[in-house]
Length: 359
Image 1 (cartoon, rainbow, N blue to C red):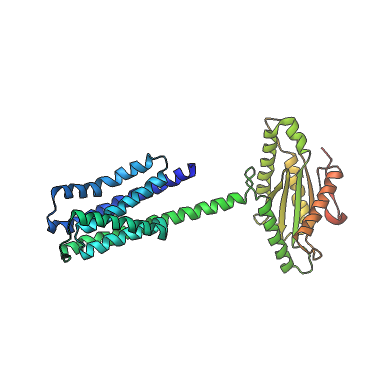
Image 2 (tube, rainbow, N blue to C red):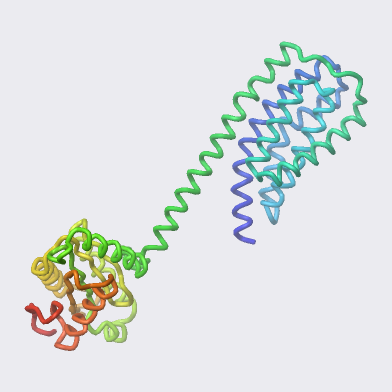
């Protein structure tokens, strides 16, 4: 119900502007067509009310309704009914009639597609029926030059306004879709890629390495990073402090790596980094620098809080059948880093290890 209400209010606001313009221009068309027919004073009063007051009444009616979306659809049916009524009142003058029906059909299609076009057509037929009863049909008048010129503003300006409204709506929907896609691929706490998005980028990086380096030499490294004793941090200092630590690591990763490096929160207190076109030695140096900077971080609210990192590195080789095998290697050496004392960087396949004293 809440979503329907918001959707209805948005629809009512969009239609408020278009209804003001459309009915004002339509008033000009109907006035020019009715003037030679010398209608009764009440017809002029009703026509002015429809053209000048109805847009504001219909908007307030929809805005104050419990379900604005349904209320606005009701207003559109009333618009169609009144359009049919004025067609009969104009005695089916060819050009004003065609312009009125065409503009209303275009509006109904833009709002609700074929279904609402049919609903509007039924309402127009009902309005024409009532109009014929109140204004007995005599003969079809010829369209005069004055009536032709009265139709031109509606023919030119209303489609432009409706097209602009549709464009703005499409632009807004496109932006919202992009924002939702970004949110679906982003970790809300750190602002980094989430698990699924990072794994997608890992598969892309794996394919890139296979194309660029058939022999598997020096074209990419995976780093898996784990915050040491993170559960103890949460238990001792609270989950708020744990969140601060996670955000701080995410911030450091963004500040200290290359723009081409792909960083994501792999899960919980574990982060993943894809280092494309980098040798294992260079990756070790980069991760060691990151480890040292993170260990030196000061948490003002909790001065006793000291945090370290365990990092496992795996360089791409042509032996890997897929990205999962590459990631498994990095996960294995991260496990070695954690079981051999933590606070250190370890490479796969027992390559040289850079270590720091455990905290």
